[in-house]
Image (cartoon, rainbow, N blue to C red; front, side):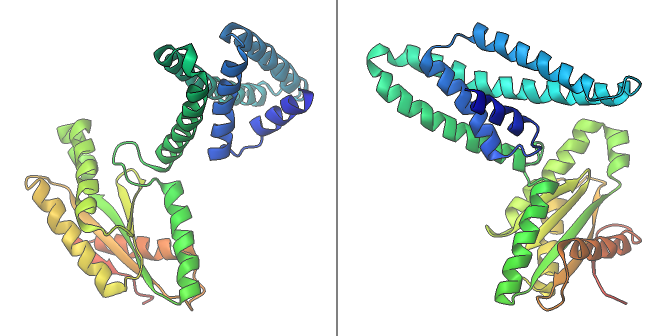
Length: 288
């Protein structure tokens, strides 16, 4: 038991809160449900552990450094509340399933609950990879995917292209027509990408009103054609929209020695050249 608790605390402060971390917390709720530990005992133990950790953190910080101590304790509280939510998510789901099936289906229930844990883990992992508003990949996931594509391209000596998109007059639309309209513009970008991109292509919300599109097996001319179709479809979704797109396109060459950050910067620089023109504009990166 001591070893298990020691491992739990190590994982709590590891800084790596990935799929395995979430699944381990979900399984805690499953185990407590199986052995019949009531929630009130778990919450009491959880409160004691939280208090011990807080005291330990306070003891490790100088008396005058209150801001550092407060920040750490705030982070600890968020982590432990996150753990508690995951544990009870599985625990409560287990109770609901048990009521439906009855005592005679305990063995089937246990197997189904294992699947529930696995499904819930996959759902949480997928949610963590996506932007909540547009459903596109978020920036963190985009960096993971572009690095994988870069490695694949190097192995196979294949080119691919990156498109960096910035929305023009987006702030003006937000200020004039309201944030709900601004949100609808972002969603329309995602819709347009959904109609244009292939299954292997990757669309991401890079941040705010900036988007990126990764196009495997695509050289620069093909990437420009994709951007032209994207502009055409986006413009048709809302013909009265004042927002336009400035797009920069960069191509990855397998023998260039380029890394992911450099490729993104090249596409970003090309995009800023596009912004110098009014309306829709596509610029291909050039070292000149």
